[in-house]
Length: 193
View 1 (cartoon, one colour):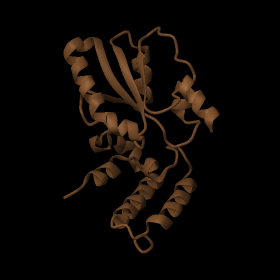
View 2 (tube, one colour):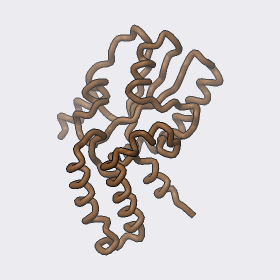
View 3 (tube, one colour):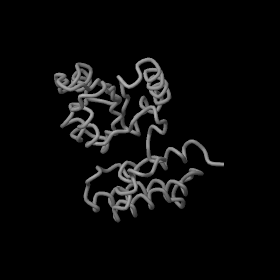
């Protein structure tokens, strides 16, 4: 029987598993594989899961090098973080369309698949989406946008959308004023470092 950890590994995209950016050069993915491989190689790690993780890392590198995961990503539901239809998982294009839409108000969670708060609150977000659908019908849509790879400042969500941390929640409506570039909490965290 498969455990929750194995399923979580399979939901990660190759670049997320390797810890590199989606559009990083292949050399960066290879370096990440070598670095992670030193820790998780079955001959060097005492963990009972090291063989599984090492195989997943090897498969992720192969997929990253070939680029095959990019085309399969849109059609592969097991790669989705939110597998419930109540939450629409957005990409850059559909996010821009939602923001410009004359249609319903969108409530969007900006999440990272490695974020512990995002993982812990996923079921609650789905329940909220279902309940909003029951109460408000088509007037509100609930979505989520994957962010946070690589795990350092300067990603697309942070630079283009001003998402300071994960999870971040926003309401999108045409004509709404843009959100501030960073929250006071994020500024406080930067000062504390």
